[in-house]
Image: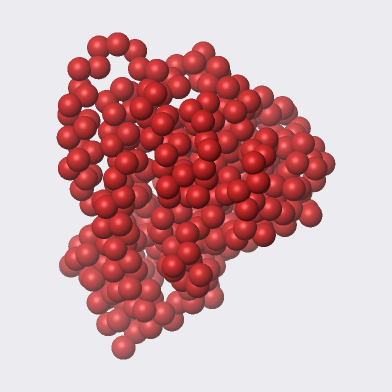
Length: 370
């Protein structure tokens, strides 16, 4: 197995629906891929500009200031105190880490990589790249012998599912029984909307209520793409088991996987400022408050979606039929077929559109349902 064995890029299949939606007299409302549309915070952009004299090679491990900022952020925002700079590592965005982690951890052909049943497809891509078997399961008791890596995703993409402390503890316990590394993708943790997550922080797998002081075999993955509008910067990081971090650092040095120095400077500033994150959260909350009732009025059932950047919805028909109906309204979403075999009737709606485009989508949905 290898790169040549990868499937066609799934989003290419959406192109005909995008073309049809773009023909709508009011223009396309693109709610498919969750790419931020709001400006990068000025304090972050200024930090990037100030660091453009980047004549030397950047540090793969990250500058001391960046590593300290990551550790401080985990303590302040995620309730994970006591991380040392040897327990954190910046990465070139989170997607490359998700795809390459099985390779960097030396997961072997025939071993198992577990991922959620409703899942971002890159978890399975990483398994396929090394010849491992990808297994979709949300139940730790079902995780098979031979599992080398377990991916959690909380809040989930696409379904917005949040794993509470008890669920995280059960996952950690089972992964340790199997001798597997457990990696938790937590990129949407600042975006809790419903139930207890409307007011309580989404827990990290490194939360002391989950792991105590024992971070062996555990990694937390995070990205600033959404909360700080830094998708174009490729600004992400991981934290956890210092031995795993050391192994990953050595591999990344050999492969040249280093974050550009200006981006490291920008990340340091972004991690230290909570005000812009709160402002962005409010933007997404306002958009969600417009889009969700319009979808429900149009006959969609919203499943899970208690946190994160998406609404996971179904009308009880095949997702491609729903995509066709939406395209007639000038709206583009993401078909559930992309996110696992168990969700052929769901579609994913992203909140990453301007206020005006979200309002346009709601108006069209309301008009179609009246």
